[in-house]
Image (tube, rainbow, N blue to C red; front, side, top):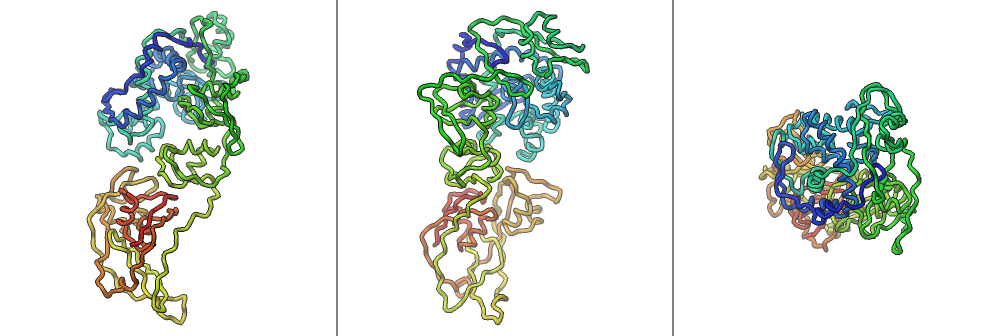
Length: 584
């Protein structure tokens, strides 16, 4: 990157990272002990391996850490924040001062403008303190401490840095508040595991002296960077490059500002690595390097894309594409630590808001980002149309919609015709929840002068309170929707779970539900009017308003049957999912 010139190869560090650091079973973070289960260790180890695989780019980031970490540690000590959080700056920006995310978060700690202002940072046309290492680090410390006031748990404060304190409360509740031990497993939020990977990868690589040291000078008087460069005998362009927060090259006097003064000489073996994305940055156009013999291009959704080659990085791929790294990351909706896969295609212009196809059937290994790349469609559109988050696991065989104009969904195969003796059939209105008993079969329609007004005489079924089951709350569920799903009252849900009207439910929380069912029908009752008919198995594609109970009723089967036929462990279903129906 062009921010700091660093050695192409630091032989000592490169040698020490020939073998990637191993993720431990236990580690200390802040004042907590983390137990890392094997499933999570495998995930984290993959990230560690990816970060340390390319010695050149690993050392570029490690060199920035060696330069900046002493100042960050000093500020964190003053703010009484655990020093371990310094590794979060690597995760957020790789310590690139003008890094910009696809959501327009800027700087070392990736603040959006309104968050930065709330933390006391100055963000305007003259100064953007998100790119000032001292100001931004102090703002990050205050933000993390503010989160921890609500949880008394630094791991949850870390998670809240990415998703907000409200998001953490909704997703994990208060179970871990005040705890000093935390178990990391495959279900742990991805952001926490990514942080652990950065800590493991870099903690043994930052002890050496940096190749280029920096002096942190506090200025209280108004002056230009040009004037300061002459005072300290430093190249003016180099000083400006290290202080991009002064957007117009002027240090104001409204408050003290920390200025980074580079101190060191560069040799011919040093290689710049540029990331220029802020509007105020005036980077020279990037000239594409000669393309490899095996370079491939492909047009996807009317957009040109380029295939990565073996051992290529996002930086090298962006340079070869002829665009800045910030644009490359933005167009492909990537983070700076993304590991490029050989022969995978990346876009050199912004993805579109609509694909040429209407839907995609999920295959093994698919996730929302890979689908967005496959069809050249913006990831945020996929999330919106499918009501999913980036890290949601996709069900193999399910449907992902690629445009707002959905094709008419395939209807399930019709049930075999029911032969009755010159009778018409009317649907019962009752929706009593039946767990292991088929919903009551339709009754014959009675003759009436007005065919549109039909009354069916029926006895009220005897309702039996069944054994309780556990329902795990998923995103979007409310007491009302659960009551409707299980055909019980909201008050019953409250009573069964010792809750009240003031209670809230959170994603992942378990609620007890007593499933009701009708008493068994005896031969000769209206349930035996229709004969048993058999049909070949077919699939029902889940609609937005479907529930498992409603599907069971629609096809005259039990919920238990549906769960057995589809290997389900709970009652949740997703729109577009295909449910196997086997008529008995």
